[in-house]
Image 1 (cartoon, rainbow, N blue to C red):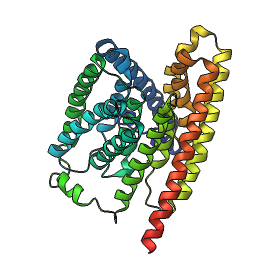
Image 2: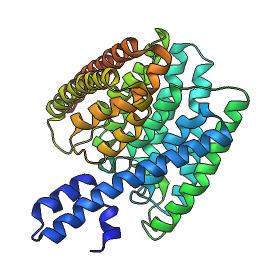
Image 3: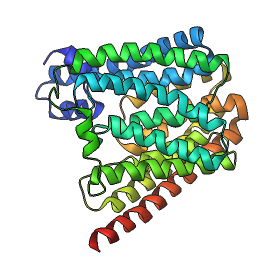
Image 4: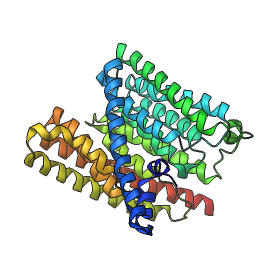
Length: 353
């Protein structure tokens, strides 16, 4: 395996290879790959987001964040069906990511729930034929981020233009990596498999319904930084497992989410107070580099607090931002776990009937 291939590996795989390395040279190679991988991703992120903000407006930098995540994923994960249908559906998904939040913003919360449910369910059906590959979490993360940062007028037009640009780039990469896969599988066959007897279908419905309800509730109460609650909820509802004991796995993730949010918010507050103000701007890039070494969910949750809180403090100040981060994560995690628990109990009882 060459060094370039090592750079493409997930941090968890790299850590495992470091542990199993038989020579010091081999071990150092994987350590260097992990460090360089994290640094390169952060540099690329800064360049992409700053460029998008320059040409499409700083308010649309959130879409650039989503495009970055999608760009890093499309190289490895396909949709599970032929390239022609995949590219068409990718275009539809990109359109929904921008149109959904814009439409829901104009509607009362009760109707916005229907919009969120429809958009999320369509996205999940189109992109998550293989739930364990993570597309569900990736594209719903993008949707939640855009719901929490709506725009209108000229900025909305620019957001569509940025989405179109992102679609062209991601589509070209997607075609290059996956055009020879699943040639005989059409998307219509995926639609035909959408049945309530399917575990995948039940997962998609749970994800879409639970997330749309939470987003509607947050909009009704005008919750500040509502996307934080959405991320917490989606991280629990988005977990897919072949194990029968889904409730236990969701409960474990619930505790890890709370611990991670408390730990990350506390560490950020401490660093914010101790570190001189002129160095605060380094919190985001440094957090991104550290994130490249994280493999456990609670650690990722904690480190993600740094970038999120750094932005929020510019609007709310330190104290309010930290409390919002903690409270919103608790709201999202409690709702996500509670909804999953009730949903699974209903599904289980109906399957036994």
